Image 1 (cartoon, each protein chain N blue to C red):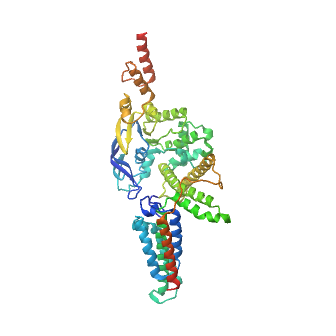
Image 2: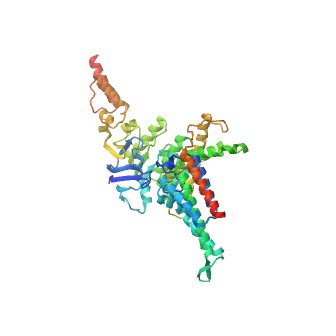
Image 3: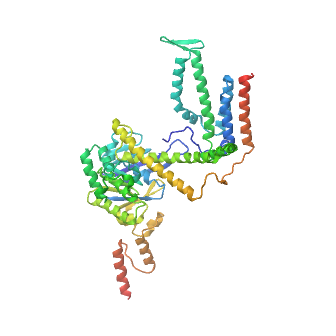
Length: 266
Length: 286
């Protein structure tokens, strides 16, 4: 489970790591929106250049990005097959038996793959450089304006941070229980179907029991310290926007503007 | 055949920023047929060390020899299951591994996994429950409704029912009350003395090491710093203090008495002998 890279925080010291999470989230949203404008290959090249620049600035390796993408590989192949079966426009390229592959099928798939790739690059720039807790602080601040239309900004942020906080705990717990059951002769990799069902049961039941126990403990601990949702609260960590953060958001807005211009006016 | 570690290292998350060296170049022999305590600070590699004993963890480099198996770094040996049947590993807070509908079924789960028949597994489970002191009326209860101490016993019974020849326990008495702790330690002692099992105990409790164990291994920073007999280790408090370990109360008592001019011979290792020794010297003065 240690080689799961998509969405993982990488503790490094870089200018991107030090940026304000609100600026990073806003920039990410602007860039993601920008991807969806049909600005052709020039547009994608522009976004790729910006995203690659950010990755270098964040001192992340491209190998890490590639690892994050691996889980998507199956989906990409699946897309290609479906597109080849369904799309019959453009020029026929070549035939496999009685079946002809058209140029549009290939191009459509390539488009989607490039978009996915860019999205992963951009989101990784955010998730790999922002501590989960900073991220929720940022989300809470960005949702603040929506409180007027009764969006519970603080509760949503608290929910996310608790969920994120439990992920490593639950992974650790799963590994622990797996080891404990393996010590009792459970074989999680081989064995007959009934044995494997039993193996999974021996894992899931204790995991649920301990997850509920943890949730209850946490709720009690929070209440004991006077936590009440909706009450005004001060913060231990106060976020401050600095020049580089404004530059980042402005830069992302410029990319978005460029994409719109490329798509509709060029 | 002793248990041997030969230049064993274990590194977690190799190749990532989370890389962590838990064991570095560990070489040691653990004697068979004895009770060996493994002590050391939190994070000194105790738990990582014992997880190599039933091949839950593979060495990053080096070789582990246990019973008739040799586990070398970089290999994926087959048939680890049989090794796990022979080396029973009880994790810290083992009560979290209970999952079956009834206590009896949960304890019988281990032996059944190792190919023991349903009836035989139940017989063994009953015997193991008796050993840990769980009364027969609990057999049909759900393990989840027992108290913390009872759950712990049931979980340990689950390993004992596998009848392993080596028993490895990671802090088996953490969180138990003093009486429960003594009962537990008595059980491990009798498994060792009467049933000839090799017992390894990871613990923080020096009183336990002093009172119940034969050998002691001190771990520090992923390396064994010292391995010796418990008697030698606690002969005087210097060795303990060198290892940053608070010696057991009796040893501290001996130190305090010596400071005040009593002549306490090195061989005294229990309270009665100490009392007799003091009484002798006090009556001389009186």
